[in-house]
Length: 409
Image (tube, rainbow, N blue to C red; front, side, top):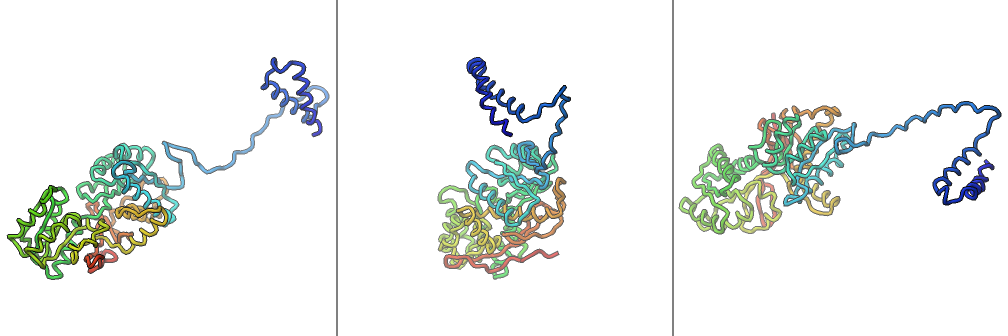
């Protein structure tokens, strides 16, 4: 290829002949390119033969990483949508749920599921429509009951099951399944335990809200089923001093063996000193709300109180792993996201790529294990959970009635 060394000289000759201003820089490089071609090809004698067609090399096989409907195309995994608030007032818990699902995917090593996050803060219905349009075969979330109401019909028309994180049983059913901790199950469990420990005369304090209304109905039914008796049930609003006034109204029916306070740990702690005046030995009973209160055991007024909830033994290990990876503590509800992915990963073993999610597996009555213990979906679509009873003792909580490890047939 010694001929190639003369290219710069020939290019200079062209420049001198035509001048830089007339030819232009682009023409200079074009001419140089033509000269390279001429110097690298042997010129035949006589007429030049017609050029031979040049065959392009075969394309290199590459994984399909194109974009379809806004998300990466992926023929090797099933598509799962996570609908949670990633901005706005509930962004903290939403991001914690999203982190939990990521952690669960890593822990399970599942390679058959792709999870795409959708922010419900701008509208749960819009998020669901986008998820369905982008090929979601299963929806995890949303978090709030009103969002589940908006998402359900959209997912139903598309034939996509929903595993939501709400605990409002009124939004369950017809393709919607709830992972949330049910107050019904919590109250039934702790009332049964209280009866087994000799509590027979019950009182109840419930707020004037949807949660309180449902809690009071469950409480009355649970006490009757357990063979006890409700001797007083008082409601109160959220105004200052309202719970104290409700306790004062209860005093005429004292003493009680046990009193259910279907409210937060802080509200319960404020009512206990007043209750002790008329019923010094009464046992205070709480609901599943207390398990989400990190400071519940540090409230001296609640020493000796009972409440039923999911087990915390595996959650502590999960919390340590979460902090190690994300540098912050998880929200207690984030375990719902983790367990939803464990459930999905288990079912995905038999979930053929590209086919609809096998919803029948959710309705089979089969029990599943997760961070929050054993659970299964009932006919109503609500997760039935194996709950333990905890007692608050001297600044900590102690399990006094362990949760069953599985469900009997």
